[in-house]
Length: 208
Image (tube, rainbow, N blue to C red):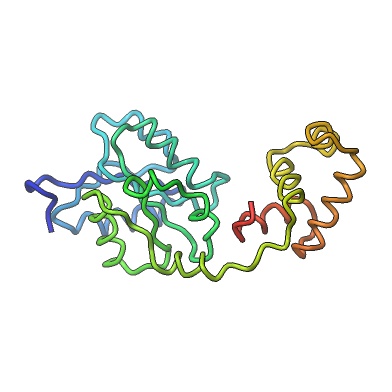
């Protein structure tokens, strides 16, 4: 199925593993209506492309980046591009942070989707349709109930920004001991091994 008017859909692939990146590019190149114009390990390399992509397939596996933040950076650096993010099926936290204005600019597909589903999602997004994998929606609807109080979420969000307990205490006008006790409760409630693990678990569950 070709893009409206017969024009090719220009695609860039961002993935840090060369073998996976190359395999995906090879599959997409078999499609008559798709043109893979770039295979790069980081999105920053998209800026130097002589012709911008219509859709960037973004897989941040192993990268220390937040998908929506990275997608926003890509869209700012490459005006007009749409971003198809590949996610693990349990990453409902990403959908929880989705702005409604992004729905036709950023799409989501699970990493284990079959190739026909991926191709359909890519074409739909290029055509301006909203794309959210049903498996991700189901994961969002069945996520565990948040055990954290509002204050605990506030403290954890600041800790997630790298803020030490003393700075959190000053910002919230409480004692450092209160903050440390709060963090200890958060670790216990999330079943985490420590602060970093609690942050990771809370993000994955969509509690942050």
